[in-house]
Image (tube, rainbow, N blue to C red):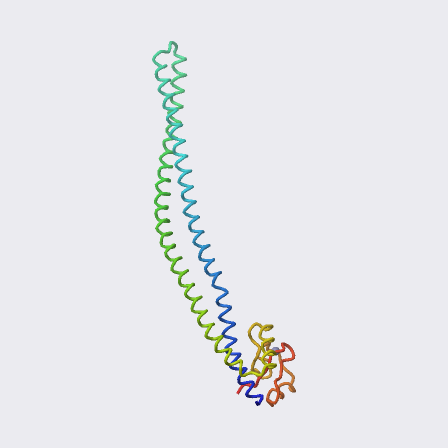
Length: 236
Ligand SMILES: [Zn+2]
């Protein structure tokens, strides 16, 4: 067999191997894609959960204010009853002052309560909105996950047909040359055979000495790049 024939077979093999490496790489990135989608969804779920906590704490604040107001309300009533029974003007004024103070407190509390009620309504509306968004996101997550699984399956199918093709093509390569090629393939992550690119190696892009270039052109032996050890061929 002529060297050129070996090279032609290796070119075919390298094409297949390049594709195999590319597909394996693509396949290996898929679980991370799924994980990222899941994580983004979990983040949105947390936003909704946080809203729930925010609502609970707002409702609690409102309740606290209402209870405080009720207590003061009772005190006012108590003082008003006492007001009917006082003997001195001084006592009367002091009770009235107490009542006025409590009423002022309650006016502030009432404002606060109204503000909390508004806030609660706002949180509730936001929660409804978030829930709707999350339902859509969940649907999207399921669809995207299915899509990625389908992509993985398609890659696996392509890989299995490429492996078959590879077995067939590699059976035409001389054993020692094949094992040399495969060793480089493994070490150089899927690129063992490269064309000259002008005066440079098509793999590591370093400029090769003229003698090497000539040897590659002569096609009477398999030449390797002295820098990256890849097999070289002369592009037609
Ligand atoms: Zn090189």
